[in-house]
Structures are given as structure tokens and as C-alpha cells.
Image (cartoon, rainbow, N blue to C red; front, top):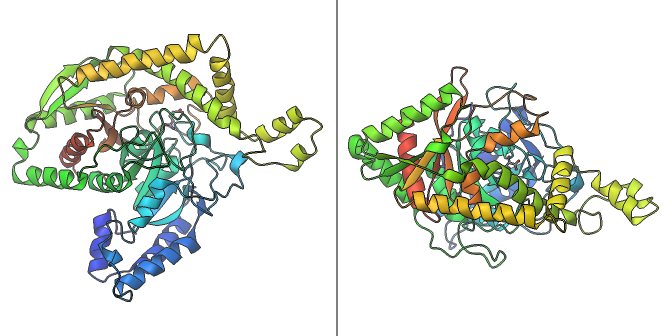
Length: 497
Ligand code: GLN
């Protein structure tokens, strides 16, 4: 049994002298060894223990005269890293055979910032190949099992991150979200998953899928931990020109203040918060238990002072279709670098190829079926004569979707919806039907298309014990309101573990 759920739990144990970073790191590796979720692709035990030893030495006060590392916000915290993020000297596959032997020479800014704050990276987490998928069944390294229901999927594409945090194989993890890949697995696995505003966190070292949508974010067991990780990772970065210099707030304080107001005067804690309920998100086909849980939480927000306001996002019905034009187009361009010359494995068969085309074929046949499907679709959508009809038109509709949100946010502070129409589905249930799989992300995609911050918070369980998440969406760069609303929902939902 792992007694640690949150970062605070671990820091309390350090303070009480119950454990130290080295012992704790060993303990987490023993938990990983015992687990059968297939959550990790690569472990970095030696590297992690080295980090831990330096930190443990500080704990003993050996490094006299230096700023004590014990004051670092993530001191000694075991962290899992989605395998889409590079780490200097650590194998990074992106869930693909084409990067099976790739050892990057640099570390992603987000990972570096967390390690600078004292976090210990325990390993690289399993994921759908190139982050393309909703169930983690597209990984070249085998699917990940749901943390509590092994016949079900953990959600994707950050399925390894979702399962590892829920099964307490690490305290927190990084995921990436292009159309829902943090929020969906968080919801399916019963943890908190947060996608910041596009540009909040540097994408340097994030292997690109769809560059105008991709975003790194935290997956944790509490809203406060998500706030802390987000706070540490945010900020502009000279290595990513799309990263924003918008000021970073103290989101941990926002969460703590909100929680304090819930414990002192619960009935007033949500007072003044205008909560939008997008009508287009309550469609036929939502599982009744999911719908009931969301409606019950909306009622709780109302009982505690929030104002509930119906809003309309009229272009929602175009979201999935336009996303799949934009995402596959950008993917086809980004993935052209895996040609066996610049990046990508160069198998023996490729070296024996008689022509350049044959060489490329032998290299690129290492992509899995879903990735190939998207490269073909994207190449078509960007080809001469079609780019106007598809990519450019989809970009125009995307602008309309963003306008929808801007209009609605004139009336409300935050919006709520289900994360997905269903709870975690069975392994294989949707694998043969890409269209049905694509619809899993129907509620998460619009916020991605508009670049908005959004979060999944566990609020209930269905009759099978599967977690139901509430989806919260906030205006651009207003992570403060998102964390406040998230903290309220988490408090009203009670302990979901
Ligand atoms: N499921 C969506 C897709 O397959 C989203 C993936 C993601 O957010 N990385 O593209």
C-alpha cells in the first residue's frame, strides 16, 4: 500500500523524518515493479536515484552554505513523464517504433523546470503513438490497463500518465493535450488533469503532433498539486517563440484560499461565480449516469452560491470535423522529419533498399496504422488545390468557435460540461471504428481549438465504480478562475479515491 497521495503527504513525511528522497525513490520503483498496468515504456532508475541522493544529502544538512533544496516546491517528488517529452540521455519513443532507439540530447523545458524545483523523474510513460488516440490502444509498446478495471482503457493519449498517477506509481505526471489527451485519461482514471492556455508552458522538447494545438499539462491526485506543477512550468522560454510572457499567478494560493472558504462558510464559497452551461454539450448519447453526475454537481455549485447561466456555443457541432482536418494536416507536416535520415530508425532492410523511395518506405513502415491514416489524410488535406477547401476552411471555422467562447465568456466566468459522453470503455470496444473513437473527445476538442485552459476533476463514480469527471473551461490566461472553480468542484465532490 502506498500511503502518499499528494505532494503535501510526502513533504509531511519528510518533515516528520519518516522517509527521505532515496528511500522514497526506492519505494516508488518497488511499486512500479509490482504493477501490471504497462504504464511505463522506459524507467530511469539510476538517474532518479542520483537525483535523490543529492536531495537526501541536503535533507541531512550536508550541503552547508547552499540554499537548502528542502525549500524547493517539488523537493523529492516522484514524477512520471509522458514519453512525448525529451530528456537528455533518456530514451524517448513517443510511443512509436520509429523512435525506438532515440536518445535525445536535450531536456524539455517543462521537465527541466520541474527537476530544478526538486522533482525526481522516475520514468517515461506509455502513450498512444505520437499522442494520436483516445484509449492508449495505439501505442507500439502495448496498451495500458485501466488502474482499477483491467478490462478497460485508461483513456488516451496520456494513458500511461493517467494510470500511473491513479495507481500511485508516481505522485504526479506530465501529459500533453492536443484535443483532450490530458483531460480524457484524467477523467477515466479518476484523477485531476489540466490543460493550460495555449502558450502558457513552453513546448520546447515536446515532440510535435499538431503544433497549433499541442500543450503540456499536469496530471495529479489533487487540484492543488495541478496548480503547483502548472505554476512551476509556466512562463516564457527563449526556445519556444509561441510561449507566453503573461504573468504567472500563485495558483496554489488560489486553491488554498478557495478551500479555506469552503471550510469556513461553504454556502457562500461559490458566491459570485458565474457558471456557464453550454447547451450544445448536453446532447443525446451522453450516458445517463454521466449526465446525472454533472447535473448534480451543477446543483451543488448553485446551492453554494454560484449563478448558473445557460450559454450557447453554436459551432460545437463542427468541432470534431474541423479538429481532424487541422490536427492531421499539421501532423503530416510535423511527421515528415521521420525519414530515417534526420530522425527515425534506419533498419537494415532500409540500408539495402535499391532506391530512395524504397528506403523511405522501409523506414516509414515503422509507423502504426493510426499514424499512417493521419499522415495520408493530412497530406491530402494540404495538397495543392485542397488546402483552401480543407485546412484554410477549417481554420476559419476554428476562428468562429473561438468567437463563440469569447461571446459566452462575456456572461460567465467559467463553463462546465462532461469530459466525455461515457466512462472508461472496454479494451477493443472502439478500436475498430475510428469515427466512434474520435467522438470520445467531442467535449474536450472545442477548448483546444480555442486555445483555452481547461481541466478535468473527478466528481463521482458510476455503478461499476468507474470515475466520472467534470470538465471546466476558462477564458484565455485565466487559470486563476479555473483553479478556483476546480477547487470548489473538488471540495463539493468529496473524496473520490
Ligand atoms: N484523441 C485526440 C486525437 O486522437 C486527441 C489526442 C491528443 O489530445 N493528443 O487526436
